[in-house]
Length: 141
Image (cartoon, rainbow, N blue to C red):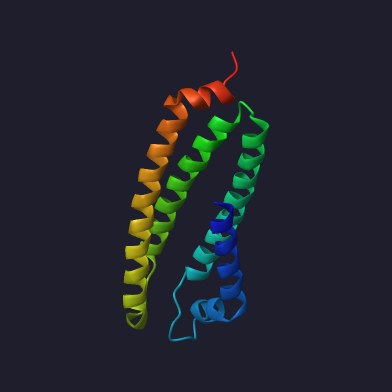
């Protein structure tokens, strides 16, 4: 998760610095998408927050803290909420004709990511809740 989030932060920084966001957020540009810069900022901030939470989870894991299972499940619930909100915002943007195909591809990728996140979240959350090994390590009576 940490490497994934770092990759996302790097990609966002590149987009903000190489002029991509400028082109997409300039009303005079042929590629202007109202609200897209805000979406990119939302994704950037969320990525930083997920990075911090993932780092904290690693700390809790190695400390064998009783907080680990709760925060791990919180990470997955937050991930689901994020991908759903991100998809809703992306699908509600008013897109110029020139950009329709690119946004369609982005929406298709977002749908795959949303499905993957939901499935993985359910699997890992159930494992954390049901696993005897997790209970033995992280749950103290």
